[in-house]
Amino acid sequence: MMHEDEMILRMHERAAQKRAEKERRILAAAGGGGAALIALLVGIIIRLDKGGHSISKMSFAGASLLGNDVGGYVLIALIAFLAGVTIAVVCYRYRKLKETQNSSSGRHDS
Image (cartoon, rainbow, N blue to C red; front, top):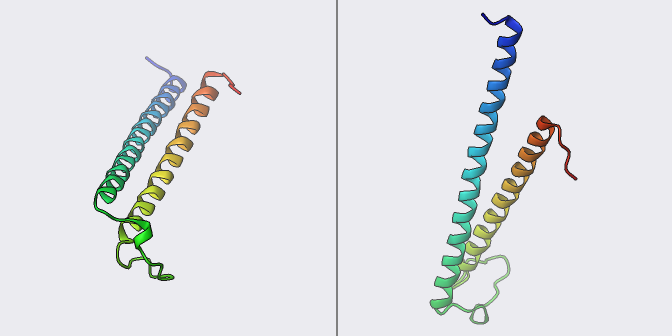
């Protein structure tokens, strides 16, 4: 029969394992989402390049960036921003996960 302290200790260990598994799943999903955004970005760039769109053909109309052929470039900028944010979040979470693992194992890498 386990003592109450042993049961509480095992419960905390199991909760820590569950949190680590959840964090790994989130990290994997965010990484996959970032990769999908980058693939989408490359596909749109290739399609715009084949479509005959050119920056030299467009006329700048101040704040109205959705004139003539500019919509694709705005879409590319939006997807690039989202991909950058996703990659930044993945890097931040990965670093946080590694720091947590290092602190729990007693190692400190510089």
